[in-house]
Image (spheres, rainbow, N blue to C red):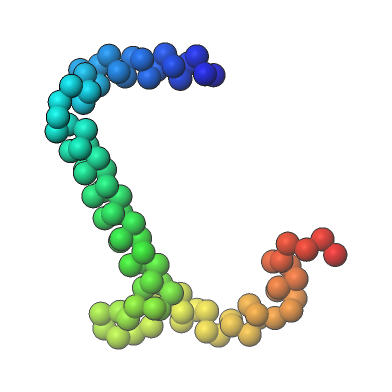
Length: 92
């Protein structure tokens, strides 16, 4: 497995993109900046959606999120001892 990865990385290093990234002053920082920006946008929107689904962030119209509307009536069952026994990691 190690040899396969070594062959692939040597091939990538010899491609025109690899040579340009290695020899240019600005190519590697630009790739890193683009990568960081894309990850930030992706994680930011995922976090905002998660907050919206957990009803920690209000909707534009002020209504509760669909997940909270479903969870509220079922809350007494979710936190019951039987449910906790099934979802816990104990072996007893």
